[in-house]
Image (cartoon, rainbow over all chains, first blue to last red; front, side, top):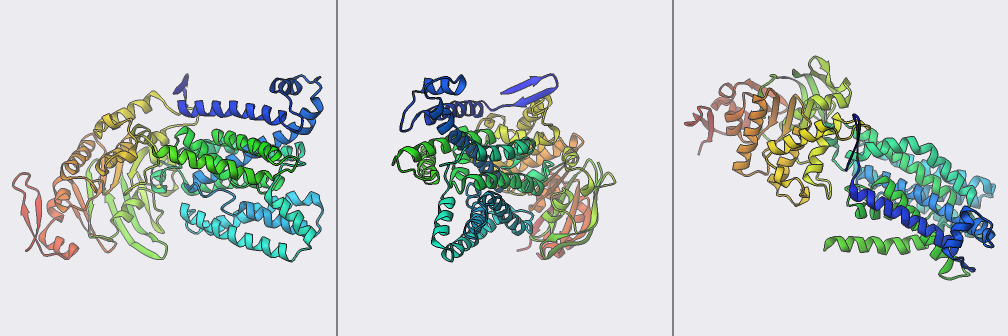
Length: 334
Length: 256
């Protein structure tokens, strides 16, 4: 589908557009349902009224107890989905998501050190952010020697991730057990007891990243081509890989720093979006929406499945996202 | 358009493949690079096509240093078809050929009528118009090769460099591709191809560059380069060169 305005023209793929609209509608529905279900269930229409106009008997439950957590789910899902889509696109490899190439582990190691060394709690998130970015710098440094060749990048990432995970074990086993427990809880990743403050921190990063995201959306159009073919078309593959990769790392690290290691979203959301749209690489907007839907639904399940016990959302993102991806893979074979 | 390499030094990691090579591509002609395996043919083509940055010397495009020009501008003037490109998953023929328009597009101008016309012409020239809606993954090797050539054609550059464009093709399709390259030359474009088949090089080229061990051994018209002495030297194979009864071009026959 081509949209022409005078000399300007824009290309929209019909299927991508439909899938994106569908995912957006699904996200709205998921938000309303998640804000409604709980120990006291509020019907969807009441949820919408409470959110839009207020003045209902459910205002406190919906607006103050549940909605902040749902918003955090949406925002961190968007960040993970975008981060995963960017890194997977530049590495041309679905396995190269931030939780595989060391970003999550870097953030985890830094948070573990912060939590077990008695650092102020306010410093845990900044430490985690710094840790995630440092891990990415190490991966990029290894990858840089080969002009950021796609496979070296992934391999370096996996190596760094394993080394960091070993580091986490070392710190954990030498820490006081109460500190180790706190670190363990952080590592699994949860939206429990978190809300607007964390959502605002991630949202700010997303907002600042918006111009870069617009650049990336165009730069990645040829990312499915190999480097020589891309170069022949006037693209600079190494610069693009560095730019879009760094952007993806920043988004994923920013989200991880706030909510902990919510595994698998950055890996699975872009792949789900890619398979739904039939595109050759993960589409950015659809990946962001898929990430948000996944986290919101997973967090709802995490709250309700063993209520009143709350499961960490990270357990459920893998539990829901994994089988769905397998389903999409099987369906495609037929 | 004038394309030349001066004192080129190029290679990969520790290995130097080209060491002080100079070469000029005659404008508006069909040039073929020949030589034994691993003699640096592809390295030369990749260096001339801006895919590989030389460690020493320079490639000049109309007198300007190629690697200092903006990549986009180069891609509007110089098309390169690498050897065995990777086929993106799920992409259709028309989509892939449309990628050739990348250097001509802007973020606010993603699909102009000019793009449409260029892609349609490229599909027709490569004789794959009827495959337009098919996924590239499903095509045979020969069809894929023509899709890649169509992508380079859609780029509408004055010069076109191709690395072994006839590999994977059966004889009929090889001849078809070579005739297509001749037509492009007749239309005024500069065409450079790496070819393995000496007799095709001798028959279709206007200008032959023979290479051995990273050096240019001889350049000139086919009958000047494709001689018994030179072919025996370059390929280390005793052979006879006779005149083709149909075209008058030199014909290389290995001695029994």
